[in-house]
Structures are given as structure tokens and as C-alpha cells.
Image 1 (cartoon, rainbow, N blue to C red):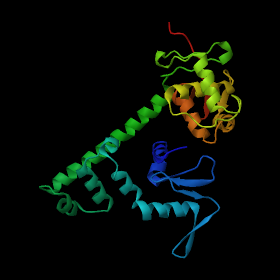
Image 2 (cartoon, rainbow, N blue to C red; image 1 turned 30 degrees about the vertical axis):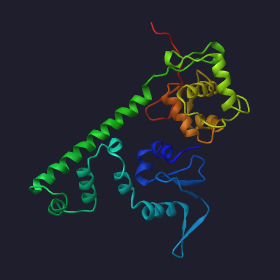
Image 3 (cartoon, one colour; image 1 turned 180 degrees about the horizontal axis):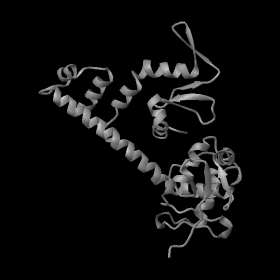
Image 4 (tube, rainbow, N blue to C red; image 1 turned 90 degrees about the vertical axis):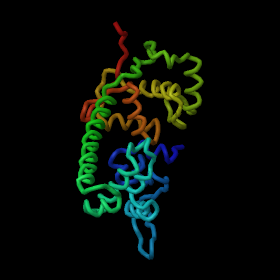
Length: 259
């Protein structure tokens, strides 16, 4: 069962900007700040007006969380990296306040101070864009946990932190694949070692030499778990699969001994 924290951190940049995300099964929308769900096909009343699910969740965010920006600005500095003064400036700038008005609200010696703050924020925006690009490229190419060859050919992990015995693997798979390893997941583990065991089993559903489209990968993973998007992402992040930069083609990564 996913927590609200999980919903938030698994959201894309666009979903964070909206404050909600569409469920992986396409049946509804869920608020990433409180977890409230709005089901498609149902209308939601508000002051004698009825709204469809997507409009209703947008209004929910405004009425219950102030706004997406306001909610994000309330987050701890360890997540945002934004100081209290910067939060105040962002709030005032977003309201269209002039430099003089901001100076009165936020303090400072002259409007040049506010212009300097604006410049600093724009520089951080540029840095953030570059950092996001770097992280996406890293996640596409990293091999922190080298992927395995098929189980039938003595698959193994090379990271000693995650040495896994056959007994551990069998016990874990029995817990998470209650209908057998060819059936669906009952839940996805949170512990790293168990994640690897489960992902190592899931990757065996793909042919090693075959190149898959994203739709083909999704079809395979839909039989594993409803949230197939998360499984697909983990297969990439943990090095079990690789994909092209545009995300159109996927392939199983094979293990090679280091020379």
C-alpha cells in the first residue's frame, strides 16, 4: 500500500506542478499532497455545481491546500533547498508584486537588492534544469546493480552488499509471488535486497536478445503488477534493463565479467 509520501516522490515534474497524478490503471486521479482520490465517471458536487474528476481534484487542491505553489513552499528546506527569505520572495513574485512592493514586504536597502534576488533565483532555475538532465541521463545509463543473465544460466549480482543465497531468494519469491513466480505480485517490497530478488525474477519474463517497444514492455509488466510504470522504472534504475534516450526502445542488460 503506497503512502502519501510515496505518491509525492514518485510523481513526475509535471505531476508535481499539477498537484495530482493519474492512477496507473487510468481509473482516477489522486492528490499527491493528501492522497484523496477522485474516480473517473463520477461527478463531485460543490456549491450546487457538479464537477468531473479531473476538475474536482484541481478544485480540491485550491480549496484544501491553497495552491500547488503554496504547498510546495511549505516543505522543509532539506527538500527544497530554499531559504525562508527566498520562499517569501517567490510568493510575492508569483503574485506579480513590483520590486518596490517586495522591498516593503521582504525588507532590504534598495530595489537593487530585490533585483539581485530575482537574478539568483533565475540562476538556480538554470542549475536545476541542468541537474535534472544530468540525473535523467545518469539513470538511463547507470549500472549500479548490473543486470542478470537468465536464471537458467546462473544469474548473479556482483555487488557484494546484496549477496543473495538461493534460500533467501526462494523465501522472498514465495512471499511476494503468492500465485507462483509466473503470476502477479501481491505487493512490491520496500527493502532493497528484496527489491532486487523480485526484479531479478521479473526480468526473466523478457527475452535477452529482443528489443522491446515501451508498449511491449508495459504489456509484460501489466501481468506482474497494476503499477507497471513503477516496475518499469525500477528495472531501469537498478540496471536490469536499458532504454534509448527517447524511451522508445528497451532491452535486457546482460552481465559481463569485469576484466
